[in-house]
Amino acid sequence: MREYLENALKQKVDIEDNKEIFEKLPLVYRGRYDIFAVKTNGIAWLAMKPKLELGLVILRKDWTRIEKVSGLNCAIFLEKTSFYIKEKMMDEGIPFVLRGKYIFLPFMGYLLCQGKGRELKPVHLISFLTQKMILIAIYERWKGVKAADAARRLEVSRVSIGRCFDEIEALGIDILEMNGKARAITVPDEVRDFWKRIEHTFRNPVIQRFILREDACLNSLAGISALSEYSLLSDNKYPTYAVTKKELKNCGLKIEQMVGFGEDAGCVVLELGYQIDFDGRGTQDPLSVVLSLTPEEREDERVSISVDEMLEEYVWSKG
Image 1 (spheres, rainbow, N blue to C red):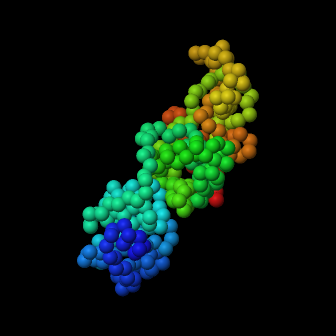
Image 2: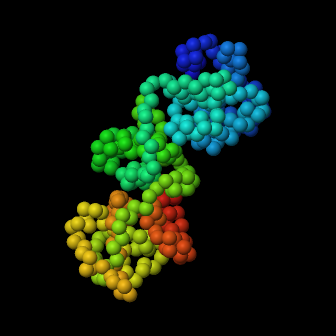
Image 3: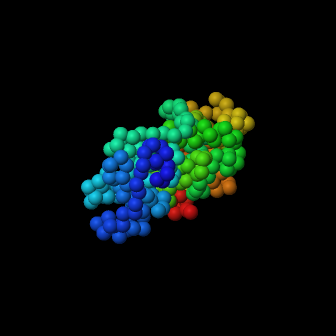
C-alpha cells in the first residue's frame, strides 16, 4: 500500500505497524484489522486494514472508535469493496484507500481516482432481468460470481448481464465487489438483513391480472396459490396461475372469458415479467410471491404469518 500511495501522491509515505493502539481497543479488533501509523508531508494519521471482508456497519463503527481513542484521523485501507460501500464512505466523509482505484483522504484534501471511470446512466426502475438475477443470486448464495458465469446461469448474453451490473451500481445495491479487474456479485451472509435493505428497490413482477370465469388449469402457481404451497395457508376457492408474455399468447385468453360484475372467479392468471424455476415445478419463487401480493392480501394476518413461514424455511435458513 505504501508504494501505491507514494506513486499516487507523489510524495514520501512512512508506514509502520501500530500495535500499541490495540491496548486501547476491544480484543476483537486484533482479529479484524492490521493498524498502521502513517506520516505523509508531516501529517500523522492512522490506517486500518481489514483482515477479512466486513460490511459497512462494522467498518463505520470501528473506524469511529479508532479515531476517538487515538485522537488522529484514520483511513481504511481496502484491497476491494463494493460500489455501494465506496460511495457511502465518500458521502459520509470516511477516509479510505482502495488499492489501484481511489484515494479519498479529505483531512488532507485528496480525492484521486485512477483509471477511466464508467459513466453510469441514471436508473429509476429496476429491470425485470436485473431483479431476476439478484433473486437467483440470493437463493443460490452467489459468492464472487462474474458476468460470464451469471450470463451462463441465466442463459442470456454477457452484454445483458453487464447492463444488469450497471443497474445494480446505479441503484446502490450492496452486492457488487471487484474480483481482480472484474465486477462480481457476492451476496452478504445475512440475507434477511440484506433483503430488508433492498426490498423497496424491487418491482411487483405482475404485468397484468386476469380473472376468468373457468379454471384455466395451467401448470405454474403464483400469488396466494404459490404461498399455500410453501406454507400451511389454505388456498383461495380459485387457483392463481403464472404465465409469461409468450405463454399468455399460447394459452389464448379472450375477453369473453373474463368474469363480469358479480360473477365468481374460476381462476386468476398473472402475467409476470419473469419466471424463476425455484422448485422444479414452475411455482413462483418465494420472494416474487411476496412482491406480487396485493395491498389487501398483505393486510390479511393469515397471509402475513404464512409469508414469514415461507421465507424462514425457503429463503433465510437456506444455504
